[in-house]
Image 1 (spheres, rainbow, N blue to C red):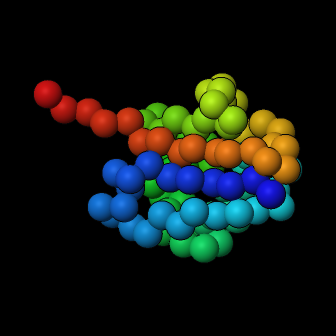
Image 2: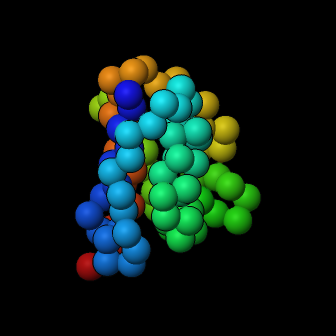
Length: 89
């Protein structure tokens, strides 16, 4: 079953559950994670339902380039890492 993991930096703002999901696409997996904590959606998605500019997602170690549809296919053993870019100086 695919697993969704979130960057530790997000824990400063909201709960970031590790979610095992039967989802077969990246968007469906993220929606399952948001069902566990709806507040997480606002940190990952913008108002259009696309990935925020400061968020990067990796599926099985490969960066997802589809920031709109999030249609990346997931395999039963896939791991999804959701990372929030850090800024500052």
